[in-house]
Structure formats: structure tokens, C-alpha cells
Amino acid sequence: MRNVLKGLAVIVAGILFFIASLSAIKSIGSRRAVASDEKSENTDIEEDTNDSAETADTTPEGDDDMTEISTNFDEELISFLEKSGYSDKNYMVSPASFRAVLALAVAGADSDTKTSLIKAMGFEKEEEMNEWYNNVLFAPDTASGFITFKMLNSAWHNTASKGSINKAYKQNIRQLYHADAEDAAPDKITDAVNDWVNEGTEGLVPKMSDDLSQVDMVLANTIYLKSSWVENFEKMNTKEGDFKSIDGDTVKKDFMEQTDHFRYYEDADGKFVILPMQGDVDVIFMLGDIEDVCGKIDDCRSENVHVKLPKFETEASFDNGELTEFMKSRGAGIAFSPEADFSAMISDSEVFISDIIQKTKIKVDEEGIEATAASIIAVLGAAPPGEKIEAKEFIADEPFKYYIVTDNDDPKILFYGQIVK
Image (cartoon, rainbow, N blue to C red; front, side):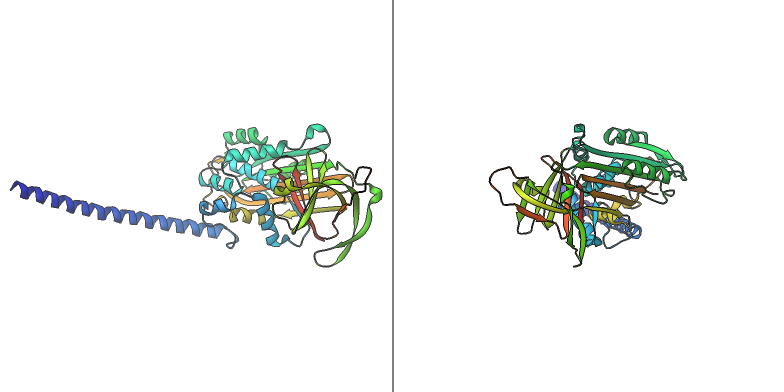
């Protein structure tokens, strides 16, 4: 009898375990269904928010693909812009200014928004981003007195908007990026930002926007560089010549010339020459299409090079969503959607990035280079004497590209541009 009862107990226990298992499986299935519905709803919200569904990232986290695209921000930005209609235009972009203004956004972000922005900028963690910032800020040797270089940051809060800037955010951007956060009335914020940009770019970019009165916050960065060549171009050698433009036309330009020893690289894809500037800054002029230019600097050899370059002045404005779409394509779509978390920046208000704008300008002549960039984020809701040495040729009488980089062991791209017409 005792054995029978024991057997019945085992059977009952088994039946109860089976019922509990079915209940657990059903519960898990229900939770998955709810999660799937929530994910679908989030995707629908983001698709409605993004202007371009073709390039926007509609998965807020975007973590699955980030490891594939997070390492080379500068070159991928250049590639993205040229695929977006700039391949046949004269233009210049500043990856450094773009990243710097994004750093202000990262400082005010939290949770998945913060993580996705950092990874989209090409960094693994915030400390790495801040290390990059300091490397750029202190790379040029401004103490020498031969170069003017300044990188400035600011944040502007619209007093008409809901919420206020967090005190911790003000302290954070002040300590890390020497940035002041200011309050401005809606009828004053546009002029305040434009005046700040005008001063930071030495008047080369006088205005960023016609109307910022409707945005809650504006994050801003300017970079300004002015330096002279280590080996000057003599004005007497400047002569008019023909330049073959990308569309096949021939136009007249004033060409500067000199022959001297410079770092030089050449392979089957093209060639580039590095012209040093005062203050630990270099300019790389490239003919052809060489990948990973900065990575090939160590492969350069000192050569006697005949350099012929046109004097030029060009400006560009990225104000049609190009930079916004680039960040979305790198998995940071959540920062541009209502799901964004910028609670570390503004309290009592849910905001997201509504636009990113950059304007640049450069002047190149016999004396040197003057280059600047301004970026804002709108938060809304010679051969030695003796034996003659055969000179290499670098005649830039056809479309060419240029990089302005820091002269150190790990060069950082301050500016990139091209002249094609």
C-alpha cells in the first residue's frame, strides 16, 4: 500500500511539473509577442520621424552592425558625402569639427542614445572619445607663435523651451571641452549663435542659420587654423596655367610652383606629397585615389619633388541633412527619434537631435593656408647643392584632393577637401 501511494505521488508530481512547464512556455511566448509588438511600434515611430527611409537607421540600438562600421569615421564620412552628390564639386569638410560637436551631444546623452552615438563616432567608449578630443586640441604647436589654431565649443538653451540645462551637464562640458552653456531668449538665440560662430571662425563663416528660435538647444563647435608653409612658394614663380576640370573643360588658374625635398608616396592608385606647415601641421595633396592615406604616411620617402599647385579658395555648406543621414547610417538613429535620451543635458523635457549643419571655408596661396569649420547640432523637442637630382613630378593640373592633418605619430584629419573644377 505504501508503495502504491508513493507511486501515485510521483505521478501527480510529474503531472504538476508538466502543467507548470506549459504555463512557463506560454508566458515566454506572450512576452516575446509583446516585445515584438513594442519593437514594431518603435520602428514605425522612427520611420515616421526620419526624412529619408532609404538611409536612416530604423533600429534604435543598431548594435549588431556597429563593429563593422565603427573604426574609420573620417574616411567613411568622406565616402558618404561623395556618394551623396559631392564627387563632382569643390568642397571641404571637417571630420574633427563634426566629431567635436557630437561630443557635446554625447555628454548630454544617456542609455542606448549615448552608446549608439559613441560607436557611430568610431569609438568604443567615452574615454576614448575624450582622448581623441585632447589629441586634436593640443596637437598643433600654438606655443611656437607660427600658427593660429583654436577649437571652441558652446551650448545654447532656448528659454522658451520646456526644461532647463542640468547643472552637471554645464560642469561636464566646461571641464572636458572648455564650453560654456548659455541661456538665450527665442528672439536672441539666432544672433547669439551666429555672432559666436563669426568670432570663432575669424569672420570666415559669418552665419550658420537664419532662424533658431524654435529649437530647444543648440550645440556648436568652431575650428580655425592659419599657418604658413615651412618652405614658401615664391610669388614670382606663380603663373597662370590650364586646369583640366572633372567635366572635361579646361579652365585658367594661378599655379604656385617650387621644387624641394618633401615626403612623397606613389603606387598604382595614385600619388601624394606632404607639405609641412609651421606649428606641427601637414597638408597632403593627392592625385588619384589612394585608400587610407594617413596609414601610408609612414611609407613615404623624402624625395626631390617639383610641386605645382593652383591657388584656391572654396567654401561648403552641409545643411541638407547630409550629416544627420550619415550618423543614422552608422547606427545612431535613436538619437534622432523621440526615443532619444538626452536627460543628462536637459531635465523635465524629452528632446532629440533634429539637425546637424556644418559650414567650411579655406584659402590657399603662396603664404600658407587659412581654414575654418563651424558645426552646430539643433536639439529639438629645394635640393642641396652638388649633384643634380632628378625631381619627381606632382603637377596638380587636374582634380586633386587634400588633407590637413596633425603632424604626429597618429595623424588626425582636421580638414579634407577636393578641387575638381
